[in-house]
Each structure stands twice: as structure tokens, then as C-alpha cells.
Image (cartoon, rainbow, N blue to C red; front, side, top):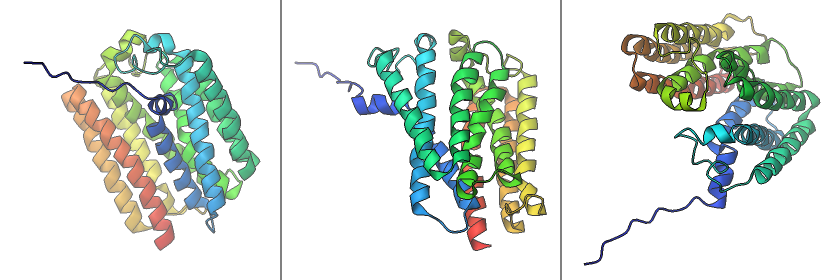
Length: 297
């Protein structure tokens, strides 16, 4: 009798392209940018909306491609990254560099057609992510703070694209996504601690899976909740929130806080993964509530 063989499909060129640009992450960033645009705009211009979507994707794709070029040797050491196109040998550094450079030019160029400030923030995001956050990851936990800056830009970028203005409104959107990133990435750093250790990455604030890290996840979740409900008090210009929407945003925040406290109590990788998953749902839900509230208020 012949034995049946299981065929494992090899990654395609398309799948490698999606991996080098981190398509899923890029699309989530685009979603944040579009939410910010809808919050800031008076009348939706679908041409600008489309340009923002493509420009945002190019911007994130460029950052991720540069990141994978710089970290190619470290990626080869970690289970979660060793099958990426470059360390697995399916894509050359030169090819990845061409993609990264092309995406940088296209991203800044497309965003420039919207307005100069949008292009400027896009360029700042690529620079900080590539030239500051990436090299700092192997040196200090402060890298998470630095990385939170480009990570928080997309939400406010949408508002700037809509208004060509940076003020209290996009500043609030920036602060919301900035504080949110700490419990989100520390949760990732917690359940991937051993794998990150292989690559020499310092992601947790105390450097360990301890109570200190868990407490900071709780504190930054609280800061995220506080910033998210500020617009209901009328201090944030045109960025406003109804009482009903504020209650929904608060409930979403308490949901995330529950899992942050759960990490403190359980101190397990499972609890950290739950916090990470809930944090992703939280930021998406809050952005949807903000946008829907604006258009039905």
C-alpha cells in the first residue's frame, strides 16, 4: 500500500509581498487613518479618502520592509519570524530595499497630493520607525515608547488629511492611540517573551514578566480610557462625543481594563494573549463609535 503524502504549499510571490509589507498590520493602520479622516471632514471627498488609504498603506509597508531588512539576521533566530521572506531566503535584501524605497516615495508623494502636513507626518512616521524604533529594540525597553509615536500617527493623520490643520483634535486622537499601544505591545512582549529573547529584543518595561510590567499595563490602560472620554467634556474643539457614545467607549475601556487586571492576577502567557486580542478589538471599536457618533449626533 502506498503512503499518502501531505503537500505543504510554498509561499507565493504575493504572500511574500504581503509579508514584507505586513499587509494585515498595514490595513489596520489604514483603517485608523480613514477613521480620523471621517472625524475631521465636513464633506467626504472619496478621492482624498482613496489617496489616504493608498498613501497610508505605502507608508506602513515601507516602514515594515525597512524593518525586516535591518532585522533579517535577528528574524532568523526567532520562531515567529524565521519564515519571513528575507531570512527564509525567498527574497533578497536588494528586492526588499527596492520595495521599501518605492513605497516610501509613493507614500510621501501620494500623501503630499492631499496636503503638505499629511506628507510631513507620514515621512516622520517612516523615519522614527525605521531609524529610531527598530535599532532601539535590541538596546532598551524605551523602544516601545519611541515606537508608539509612529504607531499613534495614523489616527491623527486622517484628521490632518481632512483639515490640513494640527490642533487639539488630532492631538487628542494621537494621545488616545499613543497610550493604547503600551498595554497592547507589552502584552505581545509578554507572551512572546522567550522568542523575543532569542533575538535580543527588550520589549517589557521592567525587562521581565513580573508584577511591575503588569501594573504598568493597568496604568496605561487607565490613561487610554481617560483620554478616550475627554471629548465628551467639550475641551477638544470639533472633536466631540455624545454622552451615549462616551458610555459605550467607557464600557469598551473597562472591558480592556478587566483583561489588564487579569494579567496582573494570573501572570500567564494566556492572560497576556487575551489582553492583546481584546486591545485590538478595543481600538477598532472605539474608532467605530467615534465615527458613528459624529454622523448620527
